[in-house]
Length: 583
Image (cartoon, rainbow, N blue to C red; front, side):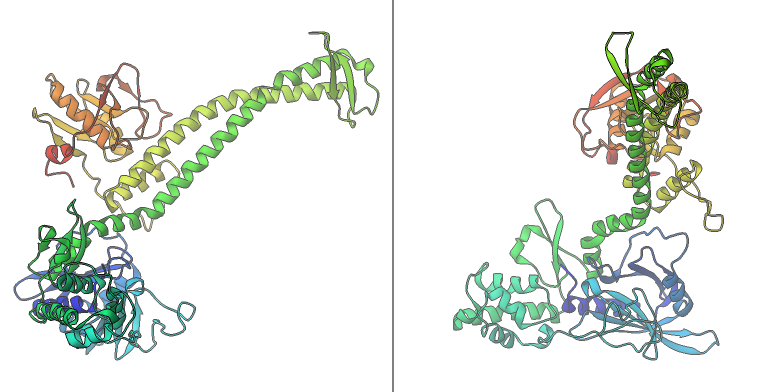
């Protein structure tokens, strides 16, 4: 469900009571669709999230921690210039629309007091944030030019105009009787008739009124309602209006698995009492509904470009490998070139000048053989050409064997990098992967943009027997863990023939119990591309049996003495064994 105008008005009322007179301390833009304002009051500090993402547009307070880009986007820098230090003097809602105005009293470059207005437009895929002053646009998060819209443009310097409103009455301004009467004039199913009759409220609220009035959905058309049913429907809307006028009851409905499916300002009894969750304020309710979805979307946005780059590199390596295999298969015909050269050399007398081919007897099997000739060359020169091509094919075959071996390693390496990008928990992990690719020559260095960052620590777990288990986050960490941090008698785990993290049990000179070995093997599966598998093969050996040669990519190692276990990860194991240091 999207945030409707009725719920937005209630949310804005709560925010006004909390944030009025607060000053902007910091401004961030974690993703291209979100802006985070840190506001300070006399007693507390709040984080106000403004999201213009089409699937989760909203304005609310948040306790979520965000990983901000190393270089602030241009719109973030503009907001910092015009709003930092500003005091929130008003928070207004456009009646019947999903539009909030945040008015700030700020100081401009000349030291004069000016009022800057941040318009928060929460209208689905048209959601936007627009900064204005004196009715003119300073800039917008998503610029709209004349090609995007010939009705309403959002460009710096243009006058700011309100978006067009639907040609329907506002739910909040209609009485229950008026709404029911308007719906009863339409020959549509009752739920659709109600949607056509009012604006400013989501379909879930209208379904709720029908459910309360009739105990469930009804097949009746709006025009078929008798007086009794009309009265029951009006009474249901009166109860919903009463909840709204009383400040609302933030309510979230969940499915059988506990996943949020709907939210509203009134109890959604249509989903059953056991599935309802109530919150103290609307900000908490919105965060509960959107939190998991937004985390995945933020990470997808940040990793999209890198994922595309690595995927292209992997696909290109696979294509090169296929081409080399074809070339190697073709080089297997080199013996025929040698044979043609020998037969020509032995039958120079039989070749007529200017002939395109010659048929001679193959003295190996006595069969006739037709040999193509280059008319520009003599018989002897044709024979020498076949010998030369034969040597080229032989040399190419030797090189191709080496290149194929290198290609297989490159494909395996890029597959592990692709897995790391897909499972990276945040911007820092993606930054480490970028640094690794730059070190391997896949990405270019940019001295101005590249900033050193503190590398993240290993994932840390404590086994049920008290042993420390370390897991690498990426290829560079895998190499550091296995070749520099671990010692000879520590036990090393990795899924068999698949991308995954190195997992090491730190033995500290003690024998490692089977229970700890089993837990470490499960963690190796959970930190691999086979995380959802059953009876996954996991190789394990002592660290002293692992070696690395100079031609191997980061994270790639060699081992010959090992054993293999087949494990199925236990649900919740990683959370149960994780130490607080894991981020």
